[in-house]
Length: 388
Image 1 (cartoon, rainbow, N blue to C red):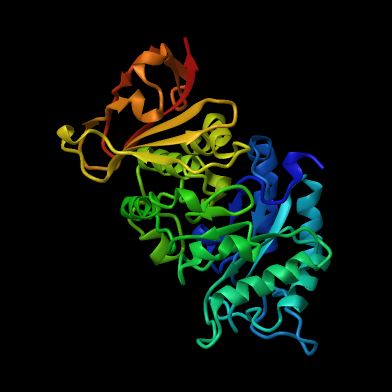
Image 2: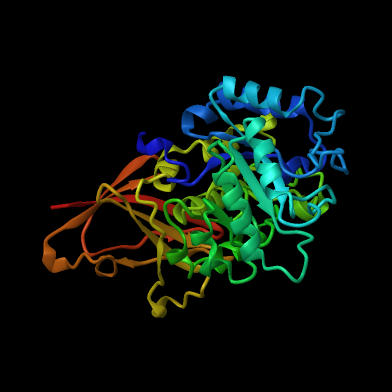
């Protein structure tokens, strides 16, 4: 088995139905997305999972206690849909919940974990997003995630386990040993700059809680949504974000090792959205085999920077460094990086050769420091090679 096939080795790349479509889903939509994954280059870029979120089932289980796909939304059934997605060379994901009901009020998997895991395997599902609504108060969420993990690992099929408890119950302390391959560390994202900024800032001190086989999931991407959700909470119906804000969002998630699950309607994605989501330099950084978190460097205090201006550094497996200069503030800033903060003193005789991952060009060789000017709500991402 190659490294690429080790389940959960690298952050998952894919698409999820919730951010744009919420309850308004059907099998034709999912087939269309799978088609676009192939025709628009998402599959070739490494995006793999097509995931159906909440609202796919009937409101009641059948007489045997099995979950039943809504026959109006999914008349061909889930196995046929999985086969269609697999025929495209992609993987199929579904959704359930630790509680008695899902967040939208459909049957959850509480006390049906092994039965549901078996059913998912029979449908040839490859990914399970497992939410946290309607959990009985007198049982721990930690135990319930361990229960479903055990069920999935014994269902007869490799199914990536995406735990989604929103960062509750001190999840950082127990989620890795539960067996989950990725876990939500935040509340739900919204298609707004403030939401993106707040989620990113909340995870800056959590670099030690992500890595291969258990990735810190900062929630699905809103890149390219432009306020287009049918859910007022997610979309805000105010036009979403600017292209630069979406670029910064994608850069933060990529640098910080989050799974990258597209949330927009890729059937209508404009060229800017495609350029962001298909940026190979950022995807390589996110998918680096060693799966290391990014550490933060704060700029020198004499520049009067606040906590929303910082640098992130991700150590890569080939000896390069991915360095992000992030300006989440509302005004242009000069951000000065002293190379000795990277472990590269002037006395070493080494310099850094920098490649701009968004402009796709070499910036040259720099010694001792590098201090770019970054516009508001924007970023610069460079790949740095140590050279003489």
